[in-house]
Length: 323
Image (cartoon, rainbow, N blue to C red; front, side):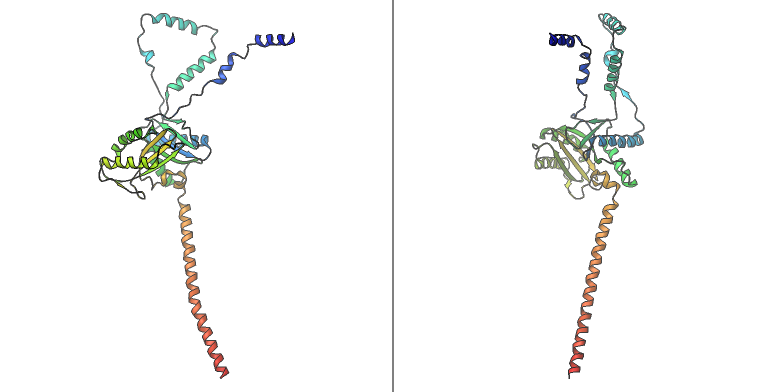
């Protein structure tokens, strides 16, 4: 009888059952969508720190260029629409239910906060890419490339990267599905803005992660043909390209962008832009060591004939003494 009594006590105790749903609520993550634009960042095993630094960098420089962010809330059309004849009764019922003291005030306040956050427009928003060490920050700015160039130029001028975990911060102009028809369609609209008017040299930089279906040669050949069709004067230059076409494939998504002087800006690597003197110092030390070695060799070569002449003189003196 004891087990049945325990079961009855447990069945009668429903204290924690209504709260179990709160622990299994689905997290409202945002994912990549076609047509988005933003910034693609890479990091080293610390994505949370990378996201935090991206927010700090982008908000800091965006406030300098465009001013402080103004919160915009989407207007709900249902509230502004006129009510029909049968709707006043429903409104009275809702008002009565809201005035009911049995309603939980905390749940109502939480629901209002969720609605306000979901309807709020943010200038920069982290988006889940589904790949490790890769972060995408969606933006509402029309041209993220101008902001990216300003960040790179300021870091190169001041020598302060303001980041510890962000390796590269590349502006992305459009996002599409990772298949050739969608890539060609999105690239065609993008190339009209960059390659249609004036001829220029270009290079294609292709990277893929967690996707083996998209082939590198196929993407490069089709995009090169598309660029040449826009203007016959466009030419390929892999070392000193005026415009670089960025193609980043992440699982089932493709990130596209066209950036001027991408190679001169160290491929938007913030650490290399902040510390350009390290490589120069290494190069200078290498050149100095080479020169010192060359001087040492020349000195040794100059000393060798002197030693040979001394030996000849000594042998001649010995011969005279023998005679």
